[in-house]
Image 1 (tube, helix red, strand yellow):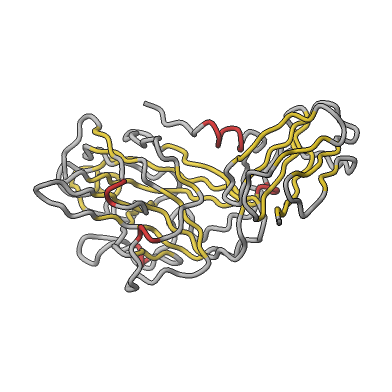
Image 2 (tube, rainbow, N blue to C red; image 1 turned 90 degrees about the horizontal axis):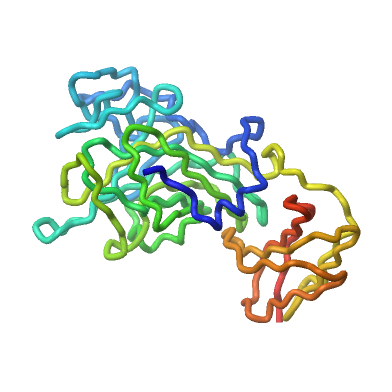
Length: 330
């Protein structure tokens, strides 16, 4: 079964075509740099490689420098992890990292999960749109898959010895609940976009829901390790949306949005266009409304929205011609 993006994210990303020319804000994004080759004797803790940490529970990495296609060591490539083992080559380069989600059952109620954590090249800018992607693959021996793999951006490093439980973390900006990642033989591209609040300096990848709300499904040819879902992660990218190719924003200033701040409505002046619509997103990138503009200077009702900052996009014939931050204040 091929994993697909939810419809709302497909729409949000429809204007974007990714290439490598933008600056990737994730450091050591394919886990190629390491201080020592991982092996079962000296360990393969993710903290052994530059720029990466784990949050609350240990996460691991593997590298082709520790090669084995016959005996399953924890951090050998391509044959790795104990019991029935996983068999996977990196999606990019020589290394990849691991996250796990274990949901306890009656005989073993332990819930165990970990998160990869890293500092970005620079803090994120307020009201800036960012595009995120990574590749993910489920371990061959896992009998369960989950939809609870999220990507969270926060301002400060999360202390692994601190009192916060992962379910008390903020809601991840990128999470595809209802879309279970089940592919074992191939790498699946996991992607999405969001608008930053500003100041987010750290990225966390992994399960962050409350234990009793984590969803899992059974998958064929796997083993029940207390409902454990083990995923390999590789080739992580975070780019400013403006750096993506074919975004096709036409720099025409005849369209206007006013008043700003708005109270119960704002007005869209279509300017020279006659086939436009306006879409409004919250700061997490969730689309709240979509309205076709049929007349010049048409009102858009936002009386049902709370005070706060929103992002308005004016779209002409499928192309974004204006994005603007809108403040609703009453």
